[in-house]
Each structure stands twice: as C-alpha cells, then as structure tokens.
Length: 255
Length: 262
Image (cartoon, rainbow over all chains, first blue to last red):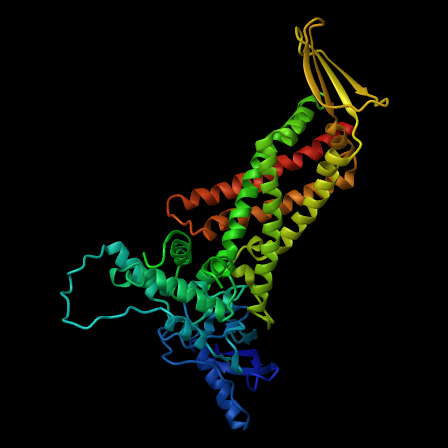
C-alpha cells in the first residue's frame, strides 16, 4: 500500500535483570501510518518469531490509554513525542518514513529491567501499600450526599486520581524521582473528607517508602508534568510538600 | 533515626534546606547590590570605603554575615548530597535523552551553574573579603569642606611606623569633615583594571542569572509554595529581578571600573 513507512528501530535488548544488555537494530518495513506504536512492534515481533528469534518484550495491556501498563522511552522521551498520551495511543503518523527510532526501557534504579523493554514497577505498589488507601469502617451505607464536597475540590481530587501509575514521571525526570506519582496518590485522598483521618500519617509513610525504594528527589524541572500522559500537575508535588512539612514540623504526633 | 533527622534526610527535607539557604542567599544579593552601587559614585571611593567599614563592623550585620557564610556552605554541601542520591536513582542512563522537550536548560544544569558560582565566590572573597580583613591595605584620607561638600581633598596616607585605623570626625575649627578609611576601593579598581578579571566576573554573573532563573522559583516550590495567583508573581520576580536586573547591574560594576581605568 502506498504511504506506508519503512523505519529503522534501535531497540534495547536485555536477556534478564543481570544481563548487561545492548541495542539491536531492526528494520520495520511496510508500516501503516495508522498503526499504533505497539502494533508496529507487533508486526516486527511477528517477523522475529517467523525467523525463530526471541521477540522484543514490552509491557502492554488495554491499549486504550487507561491501564498504565505500556511504557517505552522513545527518541529520548517517555511515551514518545506527543503530549498527554500513552505509547499505545501513539500512532506511526507521528514519525517520518525512513526515520530511526530509539526505543529504551524506563531507566531508574527502582525500576529494574525484567527483560528487554519491560521493567519492574512494583516499587509503585509498595509505595501505595505504605499508605495510599483509606481504611474503611464497617457499617451501613451512608447517604450519597451526606458529606458536602465543593465542586472545585472534587475536580482537583479527580484530576489527581487520573494517575495510571505508568511511571513516565520517573522515566522523564533527570533524577528518576517518583514525586509526581506519589503526590498524586497523596493528593487524591488528602483533598477529600474520607482521606482526612490518615492524611498526615499517609504522607509520611508514602514519602518514607518512596525514599526507601531509591527514587531521586525533585528539583522542580517540570519534566514530569510535561510528559505525564494524564497531565497530572506539579501542584500535587507542592501539596505533598505542604502536608509533609506540616506533619513533620508543625504537628505533634497524630494531633 | 529520630523524627528530626528523618525529616531533614528525606528527599523533601534535603531540598527544604537547599531552598531556605538558597532564598536567603538570593535575598542577600539585593543588599549586596544596593551597597555596591557606591562604586558608581565619583568620589574616589569615599562612600564605598565607609560602607565597607560599616558592613564589617556593625554587629547585627556581622552576625548575619556568619549566617551567610553558613548558608553558602550548607547550600553547596546539600547540593552534593542531593546530586549523589539523585545520580544513584538512575545508574544506567539513556542513550538518547531529549531533555529540552520537557524542561529548561537551567533546571537541568543547576549543579554545573552552582559549581561555577562556588568557584567564583571563592575567588571573589579571596580578592576582596580576605584582602580587606588580612591584607596590607592602604589608608586614604578624605577631607571634605563642610561649607562646600563638593570640595574633597584625597590623600593616601603613608604608614610611617604608626598603625592607621578607621576614623571619621568633624574638625569644626577648620570647617572640614575628615574620614580616614581602609581603601578597599583601590583594591576594586586594581582588580577590575585587568580585562580577564572583568570577563570572569561577567561570565559568573551570567551563570548566576541562569542559576536563579530556575533557582528562585524552585526554592519557593521546595517549600510547598504554589498559588495560582501569587506564584506567577514569584516567577516574574525570579526572571526579571533575580536573573536579569541583579546580575546585569553586578556585571556593570567591573565593566564600569575597567573603562574608568583605561
């Protein structure tokens, strides 16, 4: 078909976490510009399987930009050159015929490579387990409108809650800092009445876990909010700082 | 680990220290700049030398100056801590990294800019601060006629076995004000008569401009300050006052003195 593209891919291949790894160059031929980036990789993998070689491993699941499973650091940017989308929503028309595309895994000490382009993001789960929840008491179902929440607060909490935990913030940050992710998870609960009882304990435990996982610190470069597929704002990070300093410096234990 | 050390050893706490010390240093720049404007006075350094004496002998200012030295050291030491732990967070780098797509150059090069500034501060303090405190500086006498303040007689005093010291008094009989001061102005003029030294200063001020372009607003964010109405004002101040006007006026001083000596 006319209009199809031929591309050169420089793909990071790594057998397992202990392997050193390196780049391998592949040709992606006759690629439709309407394919998604992951579909393009599927086509390349099919040809690799036919040749009897190990296909390129990469994470994916829903392929509609909602699960947060896909990753890929494409041409120096997480989720590729477009803003506010995940890799699965990136189409090949964003590239030009004959282009060389460099594909790397997320790079962070806290995200070890499992194989090729797939990294272990369970550090995020452990941060969530450290306090990113609301303890629910048993009892009758409360009336839906019993607790009044102003629209602006509800909207802001919702915006924070749109984080899909993909890790693009960590990948984009020059310090591999997870602050955008952690602050979104802290904020979505800190903003709402249901999150208040554990608000200050939560922020301290989640920040402690974030540091223990080996993520870097925030130097306010703003790369995370630019690269976030869900456009989570850095306001969340500043809110987390306020809650953290309030808890550590201005509050007595639990009061 | 106690709660206190946990607070300041956390990623957020370390940046709190960098923020507080950094903003204090930025605030100091304003005072330093206003004082140094005396260099532009056409008075053979009288105002500048009196100002230098005041800054080194007025107790509250002396106390603040020690706070200042501590801030410089803390800011640099914590910058090293932060950089080490941030580098550890990504030991394998990217083959292709397109940082300019998502962040400012300043924000990605604060460490390099800061190192340039630290080297500059050491040279700067050696030339002026160290010389003023420990060097054998000449003393200059300024005799101003009370009736006609424009008439100033400037004499360089020769130390002839007597130890000279700063003094300022009114000689009513002769109708003059006499000021004897350690002549730091001469040191300034000497230093800035060398082109390479002027270039060093101008380049350092450019580095300071870039450092503060990111640093000033980032310092506020590290404190958790973020307000949809006031934060844009902070960014405006950071850009125009701290990264353009202040470095530009500072850079104008060596340039002005250089042309004065030519």
